[in-house]
Image 1 (spheres, rainbow, N blue to C red):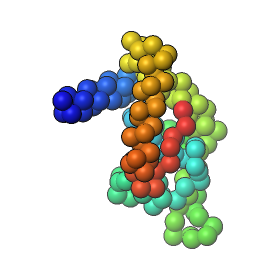
Image 2: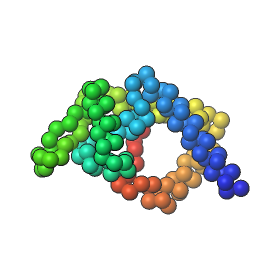
Image 3: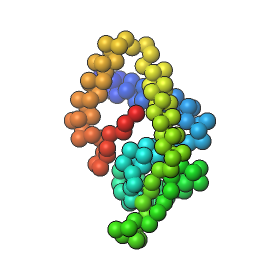
Image 4: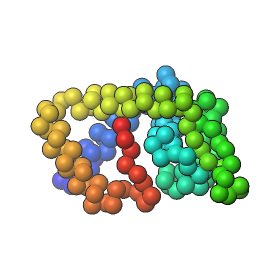
Length: 148
C-alpha cells in the first residue's frame, strides 16, 4: 500500500516535471538552469559556493549552469567585494523577466497535471504536502522555498 502511494507520488511529480520541461524549452532553459535562475532572482546576489550548497551539487556543476545562463544574458558574475576569490551571481533585467515568465510556466504545468482535482481536493493535497515538507525540515539543508 505504501509503495503504491510512493509510486503514485513519484509519477505525478514526473508528469509535472515533464510538463515544465516542455514549456521551458522555448525559453532555451533546462530544468536545472531554471532552478538556478529562480534561486538567483529570489535570493541573489549569491556566491557560487552558496548556490552549489542550496542546489546540493558540487561547485563545478554550478559553474556549468551559470556559464549557460550568463551566455544567455540572464545572469552576470562579479567579484565579491567581501572576498575577491569568490564570485557573486546576479540576475540581469532579462533574467528577472524570464524568471517572471517561468512562474507562469510552472503554474501552467501544475495546472495541467492537477486538472482532474476539484479546488477542494487541491487544498487538501496542498495541506498534506505542506505537512510532509515541514516534517522534513523543508527538504534540503540550506533550501529556501521557491516562490512561483
